Length: 76
View 1 (cartoon, rainbow, N blue to C red):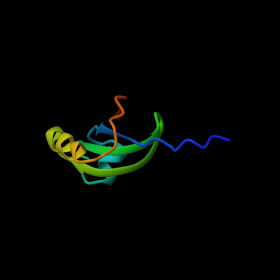
View 2: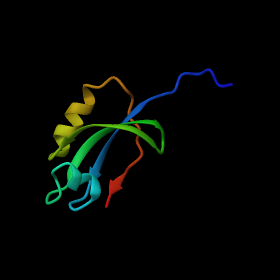
View 3: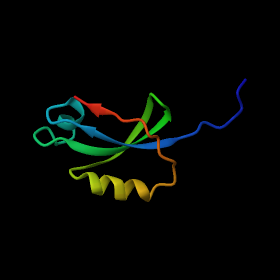
View 4: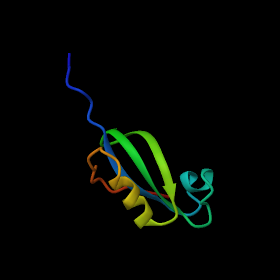
């Protein structure tokens, strides 16, 4: 049995215009950036906040204590 704590990491992601993620969150015409938390490289556990601007997403992510997950994800 693995008793090590699960490591949580943060990731800044982009959802393209008309993607399901952008559309469901009011950014269907413009696309959006968002900050999310991951348990493992492919296991998102939460989308924390949406932004229309990448710099805003980066600034917000810097306030969070979790380390970065440097995987790049783009959502069509």
